[in-house]
Amino acid sequence: MSRLEVANVEVRFGGVAALRGVDLGADAGSVTGLIGPNGAGKTTLFNVVTGLCKANSGKVLLDGEPIGQLAPHRRARLGIARTFQRLEIFGSLTVRENILVSAEIRRRWARDGSRPRDVAEEILAEVNLEHLANVRADTLPTGMARLVEVGRALATRPRVLLLDEPSSGLDDRESDELGELLRRVAGRGVAVLLVEHDVELVMSVCSLVHVLDFGRILAVGTPAEIKSNPEVRAAYLGTEEPDGKSDRSEVTGAYA
Image 1 (cartoon, rainbow, N blue to C red):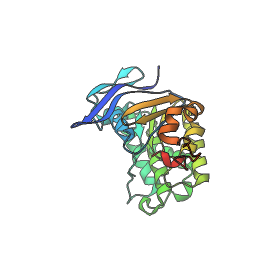
Image 2 (image 1 turned 60 degrees about the horizontal axis):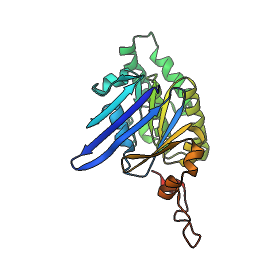
Image 3 (image 1 turned 180 degrees about the vertical axis):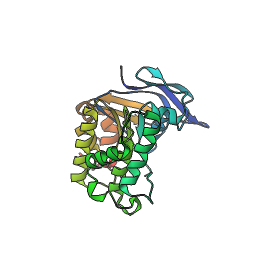
């Protein structure tokens, strides 16, 4: 049984079907990828899981228990945390304060004796932002600000972590470090669901990849299976034209 399970979820906005019968699972201890072009429905699916968008039909389950009727804050308290495609940080606060806010809020409902300041320092070290701890968040480049958002999510001690394009703005070295971070987080038993345009990152850290296309799951498989899937290649990775030229020269540009 998957830690997070989405079963036959449908979402319609007026006459437009944003998600159509989507099934998806994210296992504890693994990084699961969700890729597809702009408008495929990836962020909508995140919004359904976190309660920001109500599904017209289908189920969302956490460890086998349905949570589709719960408010977003109730789902957060059950252990679901996320980042956003559009960066959401407290710009007037420092990096440390952004993470500390999350740790303080968690202490109020978790009542586990955790010390928020200790948690904040631990997370700063984990996401490699100790050197920026006292910098205002709104002065950071996009890549570093996204790591602040990841750190803030980790400060809630999630069971499920949803990441919406966390590598945006990171250089190659920083993306590699992010990959190592995701492996460590998953190694602690967290179910990580990764939406990402950086295909190289997805293929290097994910044990299973779901491909979403026009609101439907086009394919599910290991990174090797996804890369060799003819439907995925035709839709995203490019196919060989009769003249021998590929219809897409950049693999990463096929995803968003």
